[in-house]
Image 1 (cartoon, rainbow, N blue to C red):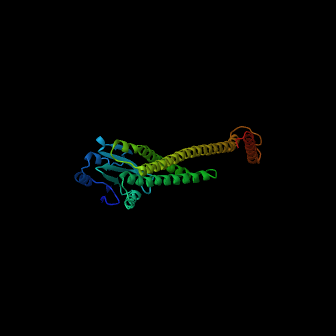
Image 2: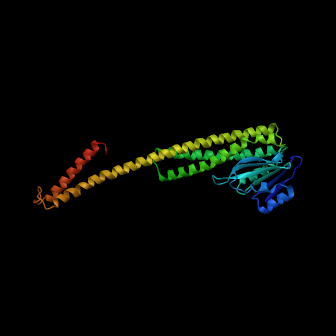
Length: 300
């Protein structure tokens, strides 16, 4: 779907917002605005990396960055094209926040295309910070329950947090590298920056660096928690194996004693009426001796 916002007294440029760009819409953009068809091949690629591409003689600028998808830890690329004094933004319908933000920002006054874009990027970066903060809270909850008891559910939750952290860290780091190169646009093209643009860019970079530091700390925390869980699981397994070994030894005594009394050989008290009682007493004594021995050697 193509939404066009024409230049007016409040805006010095045309804005075209395309959601879920189809092949027919690509043809419309080529025919109406003269955008190179090869440039539009990137706008619907879900795996397109965050980057900046400047055309020959600065005729166009392609900027790709990642934006979070609502309800998941995944991100999708947003493609932005500066071409012929116009601004083109390509998003998907799953990016509700960015689609709504574009409409809201157009109510303000903008002379520079870059100023509009940077104001669009800033809330996206803050969305990442919010998601990282939620991961941090979840990790803290698991760490708080770690000393009480370890459950399989906590291990499953930790696995999900680690998976989310990987996705978020990849998107944040790619965005950080991309935003660091935005200054080169003003140097290599005729897209002008003013003091407001540089201030907005500085704010974007600060927020991005904050998100990068936060996700780095979360990743380290999750790794430490995973190592702690591994040690707990190993300790629990050792305790279980020691428990089974001890009971195996104890339960091996009665068959040994009864086996001797069942053989065709002369044993003490075998002919008496209380032979079975003697075997029980002997079994109990041997088991008690074994328990005392294991206790003295710190096995139980």
